[in-house]
Image (tube, rainbow, N blue to C red; front, side):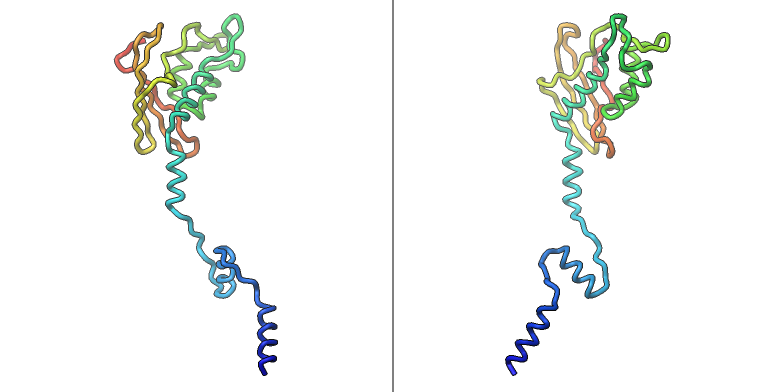
Length: 186
């Protein structure tokens, strides 16, 4: 009789599905047994941590954005100051779309470029007083907005203070929104 019990148990065990302790397979087994599909759960703290990491305006991100802004502002020209890559101010402004607000890009493009005979020309001048990566600055971040204030000095502009506002856009990340020069007229 003991032999028959053992043989029956072996038969039953050999046809039982292998059960794993992993959550995914455990959920599938539960679904098969009850017919109830589990609701996928995500940890809100993990999602919030990811958003927080993405929303952190680091020094490297500030340098990346300010450098890219200047790279786009300073265009290659021919000997007559005609821009090689763009024919209109609007086309150049569009190049800033991933790093700066349209209003800021337009302000700088209007200041440094002119359209003439369906071509775009740079107005020969110096680059603007700008963020200096190896200089210290104050940074204030709150609710997807950030402000940095930096005091600098240059031979051309003398002592100046620059205030830059950044905004965080869900689809684009951090962008330069506004640039001010408090107490200064250039």
